[in-house]
Image 1 (cartoon, rainbow, N blue to C red):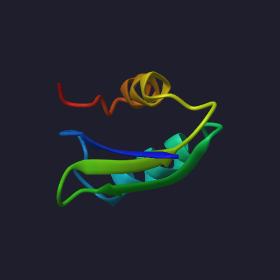
Image 2: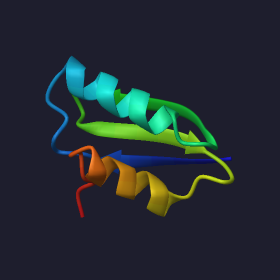
Image 3: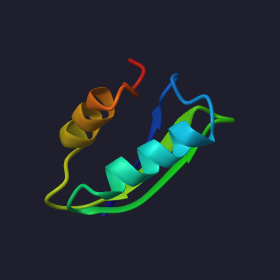
Image 4: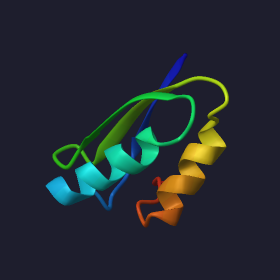
Length: 68
């Protein structure tokens, strides 16, 4: 398992948090997702077959791109 924390400037409210947690949790291999509108971050714990690239692509697809 690997845990990463991403800065996501687009997290503004509880709806944003819910969307990110729900969508990313659906990826196979993702164990846990915790997003916060206070810190504008998402911490994701995952293992195979999920990859960081898949997670970042999904976040971009749902309009919450990771800050570069």
